[in-house]
Length: 283
Image 1 (cartoon, helix red, strand yellow):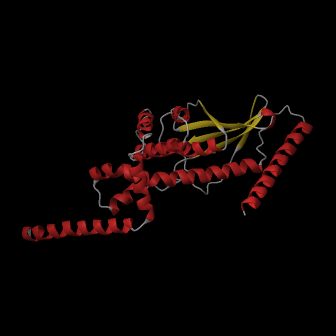
Image 2: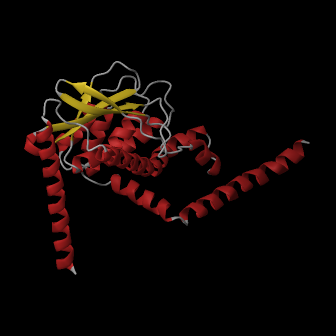
Image 3: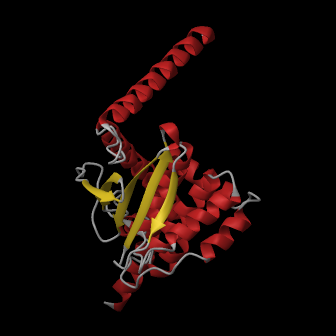
């Protein structure tokens, strides 16, 4: 019996090695694998890396109930978002906003870090709202409209609540002083099925080797998290547009509200005409 076990041991080791090689070759055939490796190597060489790493060290530790791989994933999404930001103060604002989460699970911070550069590109400003609810990040998002009037809405991002791309929106209306605004109560976990166990099984990684591989796995998952979070953000912005933003001063008379609506439509018409002219010139 002992001789049989000794004979089986080399075969088992060889079989595991062969399976790992086959899995590696199958992954190398995919373009996404090479893209992930390229981004990972690029991240290790860019000059901006040191400043971002210092900011990552200032992020809060996650709640003990958070999955062990969430820290690597959160740090990776944060780093990728910082790379999109043009000024260091924007990176600091993102860091300060994320630290307003009480006992973070990681999902809520990942969601906001992923959409923050997209909000800035739309000339929107963000400010955190203090809340004592655990695992939640409340954010006010706004912009200056016509007549320098400030329009805003609120995201309540819950790290313990599930969210998928098919999750329907269920906003509510609230009033602050003379303003109506929309509140979106959002989940954040579930946008991407981060099954690290499946990767571990595929690559036959034991626990220590999986820990070493976590940064690379996080880099592979981070892009999908960012993409899905921004897709869901586009759903929210579309919903706001359908509501005509419903963020208007209560005290504005009806004729003034109609005038603002007309100005908004005229500006959109002018924008369309400019685009048509530019397209014709480029032909």
